[in-house]
Image (cartoon, rainbow, N blue to C red; front, side):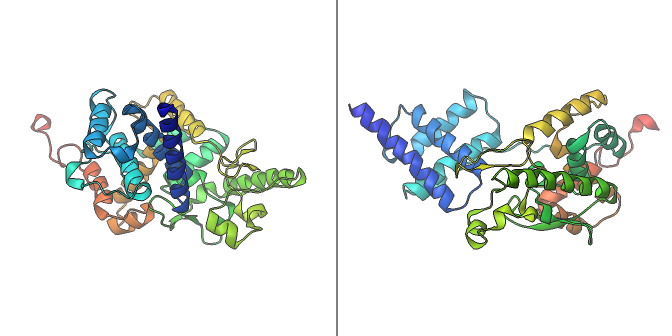
Length: 325
């Protein structure tokens, strides 16, 4: 009986975590991750209530992740952030930061493709996947930046793309490559036709952040708010339960890029983010100012952008090997 009560209490706690996350307008991906870590933390300690635990139990869980599960430092840090959110924002208990420490992430230089390699990969892609890869490289977008683009974010007059509410909840403007203009127009037309079909079928609403949905109650059915890269089928929104057309799933492009890189014979670890790394590095090679590149990438800290100057210095800090004399 006691165990059942404890199970019910923990379930209610997880629901409270969900409510606080939505109150703070965190993304759905963050919501899923934080809820998962809260459940795993509770299960690891045999369903003990977190209020009865503290820094020693958190440290034990993180140690388990590092030593038994061999998770990456970034994953371990995400788990720590989720658990601290549970304590601070839901249970209103402060955990002394001196008792816990984040895992040190390894300092690795990003993988960068040459211009020829970029084109070889892109030219092996087709349809929407090709256009998205062109935007990742040509505009320096993150994968989710690209997938979440709305039709109104494309400005053909100024040849710019507005990236809204990106990482760090900050908007930015980045250039639109001339090479993709015709394909972008065709993609918008395809999105328009799909939207008209949805409206005729009695649907046509798209997800909007809560504040916008309240401020503009009719905006969700307008064409300008529709995703630039809509999914082929409608699906149920996990938060509202409404049937809507979401954007394309990230996994499709990720698989396509990896397959194209293998087919192109590129002996590097290539992912969608590699295009963004290549964008920044090639701009530096072309003589653009590091501050300009920082703005285009949307980095808060210049030190994050400075990693690309180190990429350019690979090969022994531009020192000539004595073997070549």
